[in-house]
Image (cartoon, rainbow, N blue to C red):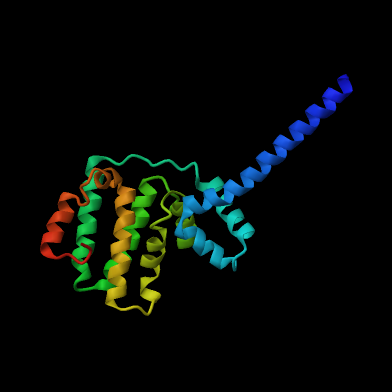
Length: 198
């Protein structure tokens, strides 16, 4: 009787373990797709549709960069960053390529101040950002490669607009947006002036 109970217990435990393993695999892919959004599709395309390789890469990113926690910014630092972004927007009118390149440098400095790695290539930094800001990380890549692209001023303007969304997230203005105020005071002023990124 004891032997039968042990065998039944082992079979039940094996069935539970198998179920949890299969469930973990199923939700792992769905969880990664939900977490990374468009970045998931980008990585999947780079791996020519191989979900196993794509999910392995994204899982490794989460392991490497998932523990990064946002470092606080002082009110003074926030004001300085906001003022610098305003200057980038104003410069875009006369020198779009230089303004977009400057936006890339500003995003790198801001991400570093928030706790993301500064060293490595643009793609290394983008991978770290993708774990926490997947919806806008491609804008980070584009503002760093704008000078190499063949796109015109309109394409650069789109890059800068999307980079602004990442800037706002890194700055910590998501709470402002979620409370129904989509623009900071500075943004409202630029909207009134017909800013390129409004």
